[in-house]
Picture (cartoon, rainbow, N blue to C red):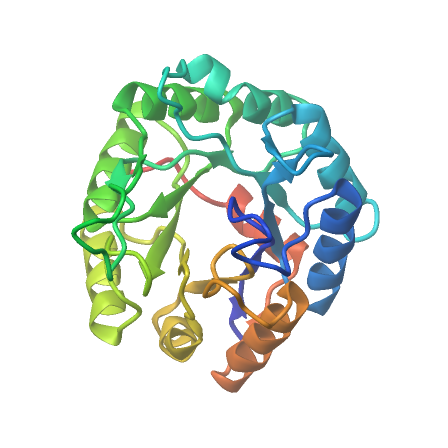
Amino acid sequence: MRKVWIEVALNGAWGRALQPGIPETVEEIVADGIACARAGAAIVHTHAYTDDRRQTSDWQVYARIIEGIRAEIDVPVYPSYPPIPRGGLEAAARFAHVEALATRGLLEFAVVDPGSVNLTTTRTKPTAKPASTYLNPEDHVRHALAFAAQQGLPPAFAIYEPGFTRAGAALARAAGVRTPVYRFMFSERFAFGFPPKPYALAAHVALLDDVAAGAPWMIAGLAVDIRPLIAETVALGGHVRVGLEDAPLGSTMSNLAWVEEAVQLVRAAGAEPASGTDVRKALRALPLAA
């Protein structure tokens, strides 16, 4: 029976005003990550916060989270990385915490997204404040991929737009990294990429087959319910990400409930949730990007 990776994205950058159920303290994140991993999540993704609930890229805070979860159940856990502020941010500073964690043996993925996108909402108004832009200049992408190649880590790409797949595949080949993991990002609230529709999933998969055949992929998103796509994803050979970073804002379901629901849907589609060991074995077997 095929093993499907279930990833849980615990919190994101929303804050509790927009997503009341997210964990924020190290202790909350560790407890939630452990519970979700025990319920069937094979990968845990998290953002880290300071004591006053501001996001942080302090590698030591992330290390406490990763080590806290892995002390109880040994699954891959990986961080976010910060957006570029108005004053700018050099690539070396932006990815310093990722590199510190990787050199200490705490990461299985090298995190970078291979493109930039405007976070326009689908119901914007003439008087609305202009949306922010999620920036990933190519020099930042190349910096992160060079480190991934040095460390022998496969990159983890979030694919907000189809062009991210094409650019990511080209840059991965140029950098000589191992085959990336592609996360197709759907949304109902935001106007990037595709809505969570079967035609959209088919388009993503067809493009990936064209430019990076055989690469692992999963469905994910922001402010979206991807459950209706899980059965088709399993049938097509993909994996699944759920959790309060991805869920519709104001979700009344906990991270644990999202994982439990994903487990049920994966099994109903004729597959079994993978373990952290299964994921690590698959990642180690990934060839160089071709």
